[in-house]
Amino acid sequence: MRVDIVSIFPEYFAPLDLSLIGKARANGTLRLAVHDLRTWTHDVHRTVDDTPYGGGPGMVMRPEPWGEALDALAPAAPTPGGTTPEGAIPDGAIPDGGSASPRLLVPTPAGRRFTQAMAHELAAESHLLFACGRYEGIDQRVLDHAATRMRVTEVSLGDYVLFGGEVAVLVILEAVTRLLPGVLGNAGSLDEESHAHGLLEAPMYTKPATWRGHDVPEVLRSGDHGRIARWRRDEALLRTAVRRPDMLAALPPESLDKRDRAALDRGGFQPPTGHVAK
Ligand code: ADE
Image (cartoon, rainbow, N blue to C red; front, side, top):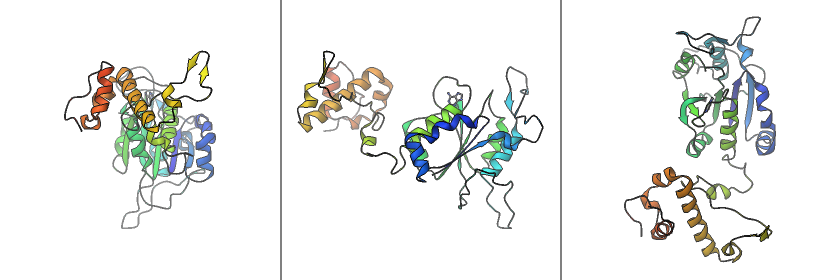
């Protein structure tokens, strides 16, 4: 997967050299380049912002540097007449070799909520382009214009406001990269983790069996794989019911069998209503 990030703070992305993302970069699974938006300014102060039309506090990111950045990183496909794409690919960019336009992602608290389902959706893309806004955001025309030549998604991490999109990009990239084939040592863990099937994961334990007076649940030491699987499923259901009733309510009723419903019932929870699977 190719990833380009445009920001006025390229230094924010130093952690992308570490751990499994760093490894994915080193082995070519992730071809990532970070670009300084000010590369595409032309005044002596390298200005990227200005006051908002209509008044109000704060500053808005000007469209011109963003327009040039997107032209350079997502060149318009050559027309049948042979027009050359606008802009030049700057140092640090990775020529794609293909003509497919990237998916443009713009982190903003006004965006679509980022979820594990969206992480899967993004992991299937071949080229992601992140535009990190700061201040009061990016002039809307940048996104409107980009949408005429590529898919644009405004994405929010949650219902709170960050200084800018940089931290959101780190979060999104971490969630997406670990889904790329070959990045996780044990891909099986993807199937069991929280959010994989609309449930939170059951609690996990390791040695020693007793620690500061707290025992590991007996069932996990029993070696009985059937009982262990049932216990984990029950714990996942109850945890989800307690912590995330919204997730429990969103489960397709047919995804819960009789034993699932009995576990919820014992815990005093109402399973989602509908057809009961055998
Ligand atoms: N930029 C500022 N706040 C944000 C949020 N909650 N999610 C994504 N990007 C942001």
